[in-house]
Image (cartoon, rainbow, N blue to C red; front, side):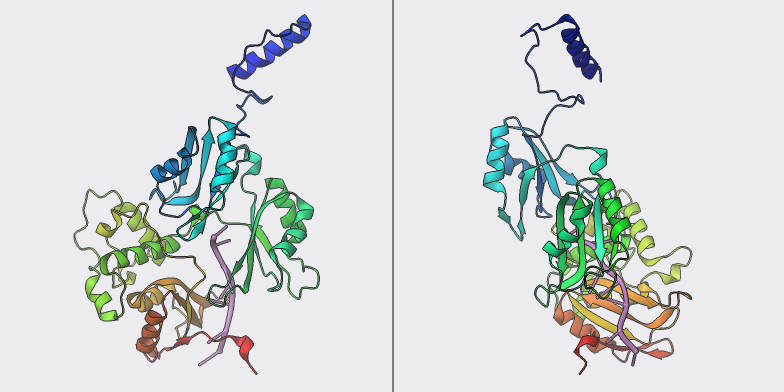
Length: 389
DNA sequence: TTGGATT
């Protein structure tokens, strides 16, 4: 701030004293708002592999030229240090920044293709400008969607999510990041609840969740899958999984600082407030398994997997019962109890998504016909209503 | 007796 005042007073002095030519000293380029101008040296790097470390990140971009600063952005909310998959690199020399874009943009690292581009100046007005769009017609392309939204402002990025198993069919949901938050707000006002040209159903447009605001349940799912693999490796038999995962509460290290996080995750995930009897009877993860979680490569994108239909749940059923039933058979990425909108009671069915076919098939074979209380469950792969004759 | 979807 004092520097800005100095610069302004220098300029005013110059103006009032008339032209004095070369009296200003050379120094860092100062823009009118007083910030140093990083626009030619500062890069944003997107789609980094989840397990890439700060050191690897610095090493990769340091190979191009001298770095003034670099930062791999991590999750600071959960404190687990998870990479958010992007980072910033500020070079000393603008030529090196240009070279980094030309050399490293599009580089394939593991399953990712990294994107290297100039970072926009950090500013409050570009924050929270990311929209989540659902209910899109399946035929709508990314280009169509951009065309629809572009009337409200400059689009920075866009994406339509596709089904992973049926190879590229639109899931009808996507993201649009605008340059400015107010543009995103206008797009919500203009497009939320509207039918796109020729569409049968209206779309929903709202601000996207931040990846770091992931639910406890989603985090727990990731941790569970990772922890289970670390203990057991790939599994093919449920008996192995049952016997190899240590039971809950087995001698947690009292000095382990991750314990409060685990407790919070469990409570958030299972909705346990006051009734210990609702705790799962198996252990999703153990304290020990969490000590080396930072930087591990978590399992693939959500939305992929095998969807299982579970019928004849009681009106009181909640998500925890589905985790308890299906978790022991393998990697579960999502569970959902379908509830009546007004009563909030379970409508008698739900869905479970499992990553691996073998584990899903084993769960179905084992749980179809399983007696839960006074009900007999029907469990099968989800069928599509669209295939009816 | 087969939803909604969060890169």
